[in-house]
Length: 194
Image (tube, one colour):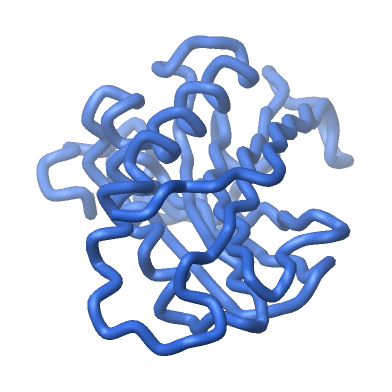
């Protein structure tokens, strides 16, 4: 077991009122919760790292709760989500994979048992590295109108011995989504796909 040592924490929400063309009926909120933590495995190879996922679970839950609150406090208003990690140069890509369970399940739980797998990405990079975190619908991965990405990053993170962890959420489809496919209103929510 390792302590989760937090250096920075950031919640960011943007609200889009217009994208050109006709004004949408309602604005779109896109938010991100970012945590910069110490990487206990930086600078060395450690075979058994999976236990750190359990240590990260409270942080995943906290970040999901805080992001929902920042986006208006209504979990039922959230329609899209994603997660990601940027591992500092002293770590390895596999350290970012430790975020899959605590980040994904934390969001799914706080959103009332969302069905779709939480889209994810990760990379290794230095301070100021940016990451495009993919977004999909929370109950059906094939809802094309909700395919999106939110760029995240912090100017001085991650340092070599850190990991930047990200959760992202949206309150709806892209503004003026019009490329067909499964509609959110058609979701059955049985298998996380359709």
